[in-house]
Length: 423
Image (cartoon, rainbow, N blue to C red; front, side, top):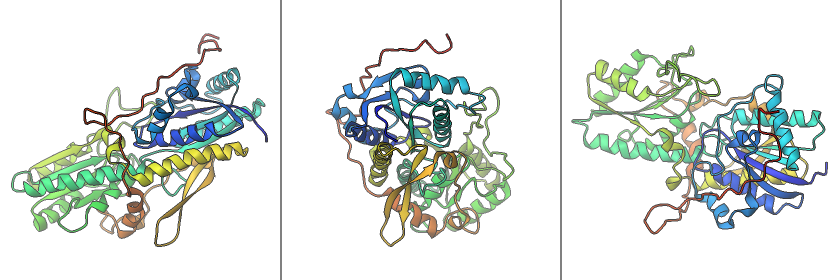
């Protein structure tokens, strides 16, 4: 299939420390690709396409584009807008194709997670039905590391490194003041998969080191077991440092910290989580009888470029670059994957997975990565995550001593379609 035309790149879902590196990989490789005549970006993901809010990347400063490799969050703008099935959201999918036709867009690169891959998959189906020549490629992104068909996800190595370091440093604080601040609970992200929490096991180099207990959504949580675990550690060390994934639950779908009320669901229909650290703090104080503090890094943990993994950054760039290379060869309907090769030294190559398989899959922490007690991890988990945390990203420092990050000027394309909802 020989296609020539403009391309558009978009970012979706929660930002990461390295999602901009994937965008950089797409953009810089697209500039070098003969079949791509123009390189555009959608502002705020698929919403930018629907609203025809598109800007021309060829008009941006090349140094700003290069700066994506050392800038956190989503420089193109992101969104949490879920398109449903073709039947339920057909008007939106047709609107996307209308905008693509108006701007001669024949290549679509979507950087995101499961829901983004589902949107890309359905769009490729409709484009084929309507005979619009369109190459659709997915670029993986998620700190949760739960995408199917790939060994790991860009964004994961950096959030693991960031949080593990915080656990080490905060653990030393608890150790120094254990006669007063006897225990600490640190909450990390991870709704249904405990990959982030499990990575914290790297920080536990000796029995003295934090964390002493790790709880993942994969293992049913009970208050009785938690209290017994805390009492045991406190008896041995005189202090406790706990890691808790935000999605820990009783094994029957009931989250330990599930929000109630008007804002209990997000735009994808997922239960809003938050507050597990406060909940466990209360249990420790009431049932164990010692003072507890809690740490909740929130969104800071996923954007920490100042201590990001160089390996993660480089692999994020690579999957974006490879997506364009595959697209130029006519490949469509796939997501670029990361494939770990066997051997003593870490080595990773890229592969391809059908968008449909990624969209409908979820990868959880395997049982062999979790200890028998269900409150920690095994050496296999440490061996898995440690290579993904290697190296540091060089940050450009401004005269005021703080980092300098990319911000695009965003030269918007003239709108050619009627405003959404006015047709």
